[in-house]
Length: 300
Image (cartoon, rainbow, N blue to C red; front, side, top):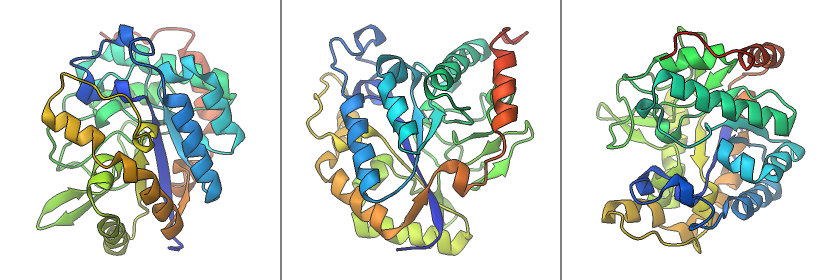
């Protein structure tokens, strides 16, 4: 096992929340026409982590927490970190500043009420903080977040700013940003952070890329995936493009076995521990309590 601590993160959303299906699935059908599977899948993820004695950061979608508060309580009870993935899984770069504020503060307050802990971290759906909405970091700072993991410095049709920083850094707004990891090859950033790319690559290649990242950069690595990725029995969504079907359903059946190997081969912990983000609890908690009493002025 590699002895350098790396960050294990899970974006807790359901299969019907993904951006690739947003054109055919209405939010009014969430959990109705499309049955909820996030609870059983997240419970499965918790079991897998427990088998390897790994603690992780769960970026929980507020909508899922509202429907299944026991998920949040289970995450906390097993010693993991709860962070925010927003409430409605809307891309931040498609929201107004006020809409973004409303969505994030709703999620943060809900998660803190359920967990009884300060929520210090945030991850934008589809890594959707980019050059069009850097003001999002100002909102996060105002709401008392200590860190974000909302940027992916790659070229991709859904997200990414290739020339943005690749490693942990403190934004001018005062929020620590931890980008999704990339490996630089031939002056191009190769995505190696997890998700669909982890399912696409054979495991030996993922292991090689992670080791290369840590060797070349001397930086901790962070990995992300979703509970629906360990669920090959999930409903198939019709009416979406071949590209979207490929990205979403690729190698779901082999994901769990790959995760077991990943958890064995590397050492893992939470975002707060790996990136030394502790010590913000009192400031974040008090800041959030002040903010939720009054709407932020001039946000439109």
